Image 1 (cartoon, rainbow, N blue to C red):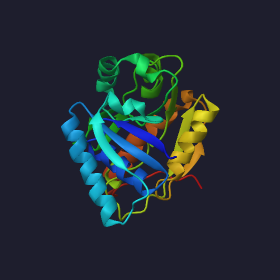
Image 2: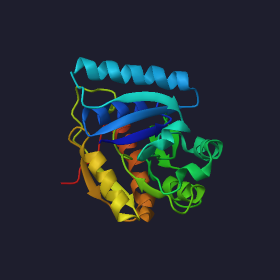
Image 3: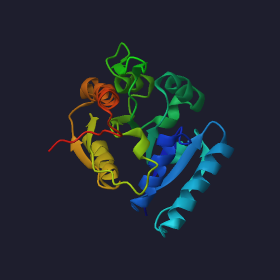
Image 4: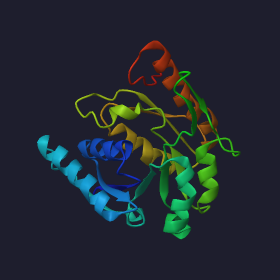
Length: 225
């Protein structure tokens, strides 16, 4: 029986793109979540259409509320950082007991006119470390997918061959997340150490965006070779 991935905030481009890519990997089923279940169902229908077009029948995708996706084996939080705490509180912290939760969040200060972005880490040093404090102690929080070019998720004809740093303090949870990462296109999961390393990993994304903006590059990613 396949494991399931639930995506909190799964109706945005990153969330829905993740759902499509994960389902196409044919190893995990996906549940898309939203504050409004109707929006989640529409997004899930879009994923199913994309799967049918590619004759992918090995996996399923459905839509529901953010609270209900927490029945999944792995939960991805795909929200702006400023909405994470209120969402966790509205769902209820107890739902996350003993769950594997993935953060892909990179708080940033945007200066598009001046063509540079800066990290905007909370007092804890990273979004992941701050989210860890919002969740029960038994939650196995892992950071992954932080540095994948956002626009690439929905472009299903494009190969994703980036390196993906995976940070976390629970070895078994990290192994599961690395398996998930490795099932998506040609992404290469790399063990990037404990969750404390997110202080570095989350800061890579604004650097990558700045380099892309200032050098006329598109959808720049990270490779460790």
